[in-house]
Picture 1 (cartoon, rainbow, N blue to C red):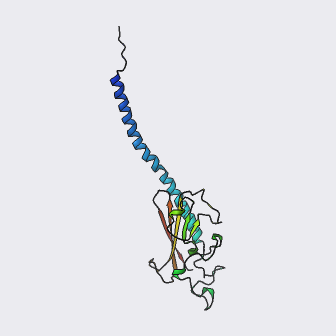
Picture 2: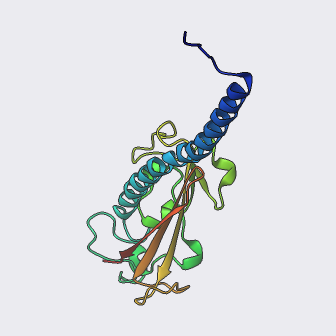
Picture 3: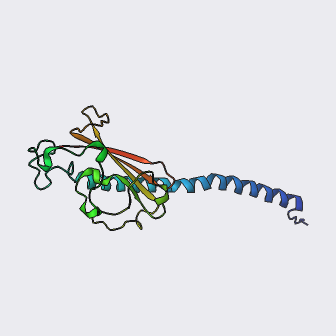
Length: 191
């Protein structure tokens, strides 16, 4: 006659302990992977936002004093007494218009573009709600995103200059949640 034998209490305890160790090892490996899985998604969206924002800015004129209605006369080359006689001095770069829809030159975009959850993190002024080219809020599409825009004059070698130059460097810094910031720069020429 065959004797049927089950698991003893000690064998059951050993099995439970081994299963517990295996589960802890599995979850300690899996949890960091889940947390980091959103990083590439945020980086892709940050790149798309930065490309859109940079295109919007570079589509504008070089300077407030440029001929924005056809571009026949560049700022700094106008007739004495005309609006195009000089370009905006370095210390006066920034928005001249009150509404975003009226922005017409690259330095109008200087400042922090925020969503409701990121407004307190802004490092620059003025502050604007993150919006599309039409001025419509895009907060629901870019929650936890913030864009810092800086525009400075640069000389031909790319060095920052306090003098009026023929080039402006537009720098965007995109902050997307807890991911690493994305920084983009472009040069706009006075042509």
